[in-house]
Every structure is written in structure tokens, then in C-alpha cells.
Image 1 (cartoon, rainbow, N blue to C red):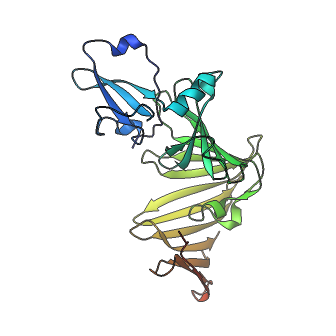
Image 2: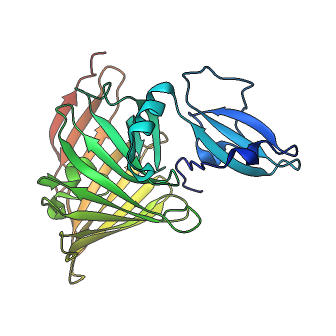
Image 3: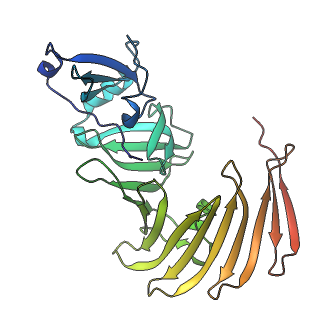
Amino acid sequence: MKYHFFFVLFSLGSIFSQPDSTVKLFSTDLMRTNILSGEAKESVKKNEAHFRAVYYPSGELKSVEFIPANWDKGRRKKAKSPSRLRLYYKKWNPKKQELVEGITKKEGKGKPHYRATLDEKGLVQDVDYFNRHGKMLWTFHMRWDEEGKSSEYDIEFYSNRNLSELNHELFAPDLSTIRPGWIARYRINSEGTTKGVSIFDQFENLYYFYQFSYGNNGLRSKYYRADSLLVGSHTVRFDTDKKPLRITYYNENGIMKNAIAYEYPGDAEMIVSQINSKGEVIERRIIPKKEN
């Protein structure tokens, strides 16, 4: 699996005027990696952002140019440098490294949203997350190789956080504290799966780290202090829709401490059960469905 953002190649006009070139238009809901197999459009509206792809007669892709929408063009002209181009989105999927549902800066006010900063090549360098109050909570700092692939990225935090609250599948309450300025460094394997996360302070001092292994509908997470001392582990079992069914926590000796079970009935969002070390349910909580 390849991980690419929008590669915006600002090519000279002469390239697109060559007689041996074929020009196709693609809507921006297609990722760069999907362009070859995506469905081309004969034309697009003047105010619709799109890709302009140029192919050799053999069918091989020559280059891709991003044609922004009208609101984007105006902001591009005002930018002092192409490296400071910023685009806004409703959603960001760090696992697939995709930004979707583009919006204007004005449309993002009063709503949680993401701001992506692109370099002169159109490659996304940073993704900032803002809550509905306009406060920036954290930033994804992307790391790319010469081929435009990413196997590692950092998340910089600006306030006290708890990683287990942000992602209870990967992280455990026993070791997940984050302070302002700290960084969580994610390492990704070739299949796009997180294989490890290391936590550093602003001076690159390692505090603790996680290692993950995967099986059929399951995940095992182990966590260590900076000196590689094992603190504990937990396993996660998923259903066919990748929803967690049970998270079981163990101490450093592999002895079960407690567990959390999840149910998804039709008349509720979720039922969460707390289980003690003896396997007994000590608490059940029903989370109602959200109103539309």
C-alpha cells in the first residue's frame, strides 16, 4: 500500500501542449494513488477543484497538476511563498494519510477541522487539528522519503493529554501521559499499520514507547519505559466491522488485571462492561445513540 498526498506539480505550459500528450480531468475526491484507475471526466465546473493528468501515448502517467477551486485560487495568489499554502479539511485519516472533504477557512470556524500546510511541491508537511473553539490541539508532522512515501510521522501536542483517551485500542492508561510540547512518533509498516509509537519531550528525550503486533481480528500492545522495562500489555479483539469487542489488560508478568467488553445493540450506540481480574462483570454502562 502506498501513502501519498496530493502531489501538485506546477509544470510549464509547454509540457501540456505537446502533441503526444493526452489530458484527463479528475475530481479531487480521488487520491493521487487512485488516479490511474479512477474515472475521468470530460469537463468540470469552473469553481470545482480538480486534477489535470497528462499521459504518454502508451498510457503511462506523465504528470499531474492540481487546479484549485475559485476560493483556493484567491488564497494561492495571496500566499507569500508556495511553501506556505494552507488548505482546510473536515476529516483527516492518519492511518491512510488522507485529507478529505475540503472546506474554506471561513467554513471551519466554530467546527472541528484540520489545516494542511503544503510545500512547494504540493506535498503535505503539517496537519493541524483545531477544536470548535478554534484552539489548535496538536499537529501532525509528516516525514517523506525521496519517492514520496512515508513510514513515520510525529504528532506534537500543545496541552496535557492522555493517549489512551485519544485511542484506547493502541494505548493503555498505565502509560499514556502527554505534556505540552511532547511528541508521539508513529512508525508505519508497508501495509499502513502502526507498528510502534515512541514518546519524546521537546528535547527529544525518550520517556516511553509502545510496540504492536497483529493477528486475525486481534491486536497486542506492549508498553515499555525508556529503559526498556516492560510496564504491561493488553490485547484487543475486533468484530468483522473492526469494532473492538474486548480489551484485556495484563501486568508486566502477563497476569490479567481487568478488561473492558463492548456490545453494539440496535437500540443503543454501545454497551460497555467493566470486568475485574476474576472475569466478573462489575459495571455495565449503556451509551445511547447520538441524535442526528
